[in-house]
Length: 228
Image (cartoon, rainbow, N blue to C red):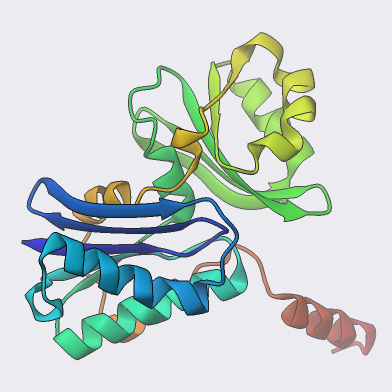
């Protein structure tokens, strides 16, 4: 069975092609690129290197968010379009879980984060292969939660560096920071996680932002102000 994995949910771009348990080809980049321009060429080049024709793909795995609104939409839209065109199943996986999947053997809590600005983060907390929590929250609340768990914590993600001083200040010796290589999402890991899931109906596959958009938030504020 041949899988195509796509993750465009944040700054990194990750694409992989797997056949059964073998990674045929994988691409990942931590550079800031425009996913709307770079994703399809990366997929086409990777399929070419793997010697796979588009009509040979059996299933699609896509990272569904959270992350960049635009980035998440691009990856999900490309995945859905390919799945619909090729009439193949699509599975979607949390982008935070994909990051945490880089550290499956850590003895403690794995916490993946993406910066959400203004002191907030998208955070996934995982332990013993299970999801404890995935949420949009303040960094302060996240660190309080992790401190109360009383376990060693491994942080994963490119944006950890932004908050590392505050993280270290609160969690002290209990915390570790994954290497740069492990902080980039892997589309091969995405595929492995997708294999454990049931296929989603193509049109039911949607982004999961874990928070409302700015436009929605402003609309709700306006409604509340007007007593509606």
